[in-house]
Image (cartoon, rainbow, N blue to C red; front, side):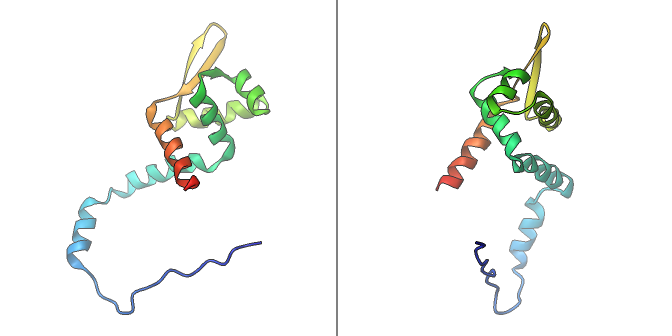
Length: 121
């Protein structure tokens, strides 16, 4: 069952707050940076990628481990890891014939925990 979406309320008269408008024009990032940010958040729009990130939040691991834990094929995991690496969310290191993956930095952990905190409110 779909919920009805209430329309956003609008001003009853049209007027522009010029001082506010000028401040926002100065502070809002350039379109290119906003596009990069949108692409970054798009990564979190896929449940499989979020599951991989949560697993890597717990521990560094190889594709074999991720595949077993997430009950997916190694090919599917590798495909998502490639995308996550391109977006700089994960990094890897080789140890002999095994490649281990981990989160690229603490920002990813913060984003995941703040996102979860937001949806649990």
